[in-house]
Image (cartoon, rainbow over all chains, first blue to last red; front, top):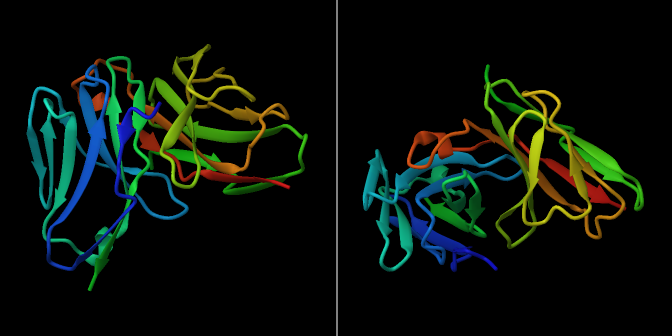
Length: 111
Length: 117
């Protein structure tokens, strides 16, 4: 039972444009959401997070939006850069730090 | 430098052999985790430990065992009972804490790719 879903396995955008990565979850008990970025043969690195008490969190070029009623969150990257090309994992956690990950979306930013 | 190390980066084993993957952290984190990643799937939790000498099964613990004798170390043994052990294994750690705080962030090691021949 996959509680966190990333339905788009890949996304390709042009440099300078906006990248929007989407994530849906099923468990309404999740109260903290995170995005991780992963390069090949490396571990994921933390990118940005949002608590369930907020609907938006911004950090430089990265913004995460949370829509609790739709159980949906998205990551916006603007402007996209070739160095942003990686696999992005959405994660959701419960109060006991139990974290569930989506399958990932491979983002390719073309120069 | 604070961080998490996993060794080796690549590991080959014959079918039926047990193998132990190393994970060490010097971040003074209480909690440690083991995940496996398979193509087209997210990270799936194998085991986690919130404190020394204590650990809990994750979603796919069958065929695996762990120990947590020291705060810094959380080795994972892939036993011969694991039916499909070939995968990319990731270790992570975090500050154990309540939700809504930065402590939910997990720091990952570089991973070990295990191939069973």
